[in-house]
Length: 155
Image (tube, rainbow, N blue to C red; front, top):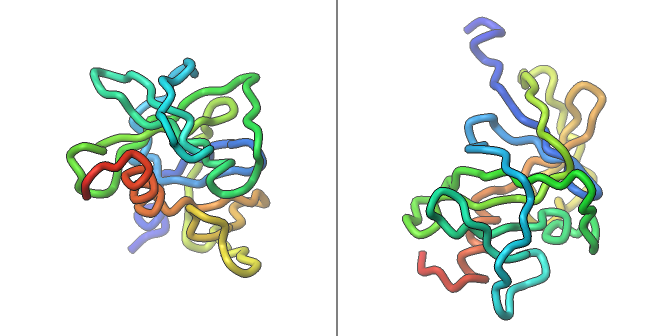
C-alpha cells in the first residue's frame, strides 16, 4: 500500500485548554455558537441542547469533560457537529464547543506519535504528537455513552 493510501484526512479542533484530533469524516458541519437550551440536572460538561436541522443536539464542553478547564472561553466560539459512532437512533449527532475554526490535516502512521503520560483524561483515548503539535484523540463512543447516561437515553 502506498503512503498516500494509508494517510487519512483529519481535523484538529481547539477547545479551551487543549486540542482534539478527529477523522474528517466525523465532522458533519461547523456552526455558529448560540446559547443552548438548558438540560435540568445535567453534569457541568453538558451545556444544553442546540437546534440543528430539526434535531435538538446535546452540546458538550469537552474541556470540562476531560478536565482541561472549568470555564469555557466564549470569544470566537464555534460548534462542531459530530456524527455519532454508536448505533443509537436517538443520538445520531452531538456537538462540541470549539474555539475558532477546525483545521484540516493529513495524518500518516509515521507522523503520528503516541505521547501518553499515564492515564488519559476522561473522554480521551490518549495524547498524540502530530507535526510538533500535541492533540488528544477523543473516545467518541465513551462521550456518546456519557451523553446518553446524562440525558437518560436508552441504549
